[in-house]
Amino acid sequence: MKRVPMLNLRLEYEYMKKDIDAVIQRCLEHQQWILGPEVKEFEERVAEYLGVKHCIGVSSGTDALLLSLRALAIKTKGEEYLERSDEIITTPFTFTATGDTILRSGATPVFVDIDPVTYNIDPAKIREYINQNPGKIVGIVPVHLYGQSCNMDEIMEIASEYNLFVVEDVAQAFGAKWKGRKLGIIGSAGAFSFFPSKNLGAFGDAGLVATNDDEIFDLVRMLRVHGGKDKYNVEHIGYKARVDTIQAAILLAKLKYIDEFNERRRKIAEMYNKGLKGIEDLILPTEVQGYHIYHQYTIRTSRRDELQSYLKERGISTMVYYPVPLHKMKVFGNGRSKVFGSLVHAEQAAMSVLSLPIEPLQSKEDTEYVIETVRSFFKA
Image 1 (cartoon, one colour):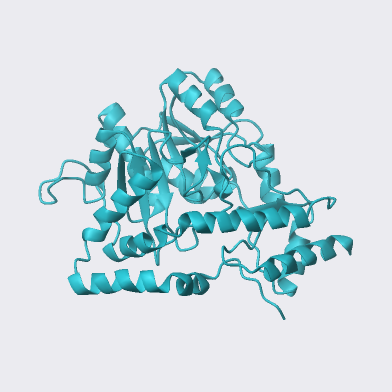
Image 2 (tube, one colour):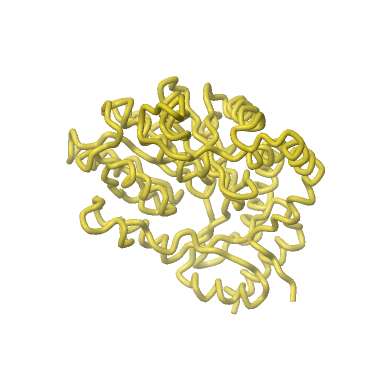
């Protein structure tokens, strides 16, 4: 039986083998495993790629979010942590880390509904909540889900009007753009994940914070190494959250391929769009504005579970991102978070979305097989 995986990391390694093996060999020779030369080089290369002043390599995308929020607490309040009375608006339709890091920063996440077309946070709902709850909100954490930008014009306009910080969650959107600007450099800080399955993935956990703010840069650099410029005389409550040298080296090797691979994803998405067009009870992703890099190609159908089983039986891997919205999780209960409105669009999406394989090196034949199999399901 033919098999089409969601992701084939072995195939990607073989494609980049010469470059990856070379940087690993370099690390083996110099043996500087903690904040070795590849870390600084990677930070500088990514800063140049994104068009941002500062980048700081950290241990994961989760830590990138947390350290950004902690740095903003110190910068804006002069305190180590935010307070429960400090509210941060975000989306419920995202990975757990988005809301969890708000809790860990000391603040209270406020979940507002999403735009049902892009699955990203709805700026109109942000403004509506702020108008009804003036003075409580300190920041916004928009998530550029599936590789498509949130409406950053409206979000930044709201942030400017109410003096709020914005931490972009760019875990799924490295290289994506909003009106020509790379994501992660528009708000106060951008938090990136390099988990192996991301469109720029390490060989383990890794992350990065991007910012144009000198103070945030200095604070995140301290927080990632126990909280001080001198680890034996620290200033803040910090973490052991630096990126490993070996991961920075691997990411350096893979960075040269990111634009090529993002374009490959877009071409596969174009094939899906043409091949799956016109099927009743099937909603295809829509590229609204900006430059969508299709970290996931996500469809919607009321027959999601049936379709997923049908595809699995025929060797096609799929994933549901995400089956449970954050406001339905126990960790965000017991008064730890707030919910604004019904969140009906987030809840409907959680019951109906399905991500199809969009491996950058996926063959035309495999993509056509997925299209034919999806079409055969709906015909049946």
